[in-house]
Image (cartoon, rainbow, N blue to C red; front, top):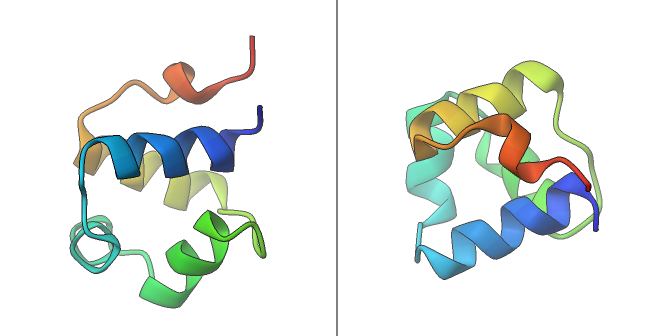
Length: 64
């Protein structure tokens, strides 16, 4: 399972609104939305910002 899929599942499980997450992480909404739809990849800095807002260790999204 790829990082984007795991991130999408986590966001859905926690009922996090994409717009709110994007605003708090400083990531453009369209970028985050397209990432979660599998149409774009997040930059490392964007991914780390999202993880910081979610208060989750980025390693939790790495493939096993």
